[in-house]
Image (cartoon, rainbow, N blue to C red; front, side):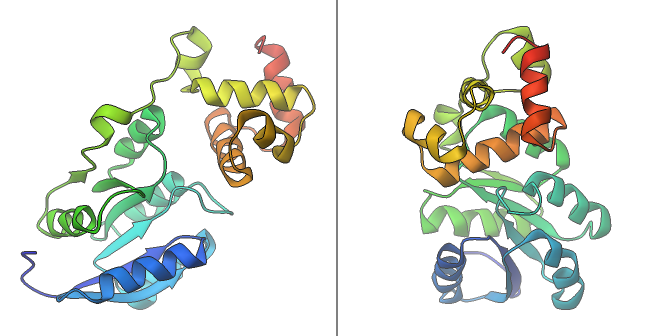
Length: 211
């Protein structure tokens, strides 16, 4: 890895085991210093101010704020900080939203260590880095007008229908063969895209738009 000086990295992910695993994975590398770990959005700006990282690895799915919104906030307040989104989502609309914020990289969580290192090297050398897997795995949004208008994927529309039918996240997970956490993440992204914040608002949206 070609980095002239040590790069200071801040890890932001609400899953403690993943966060700790990422720290362990990267700490063994020369010229990489993990300066801190944060597990929720509300502590991020303070941590950046206190720790002065060169780069942050940021999960999109945080419990208290959408990571894309947070990325935009970080770049507004600390424009010199590099941001690589590290996520399980290959959804095309989420990817495009991320690009619009000006993030420097987007890597899927099932990537290799070498991909992470390549991403770090690229962004600290004033380049961008986007996971090669995205080219073949991006899940396109459906072609209907409503989906295009609100950037909803087919899976998100399906989940809206189950919410409208009165199912909770555990029941939706059972119906869709997804994990509970994945369903919660989808619901958080749906609220972000639609500008809703409660289940009743989401059901009202579904009724008004024929979902």
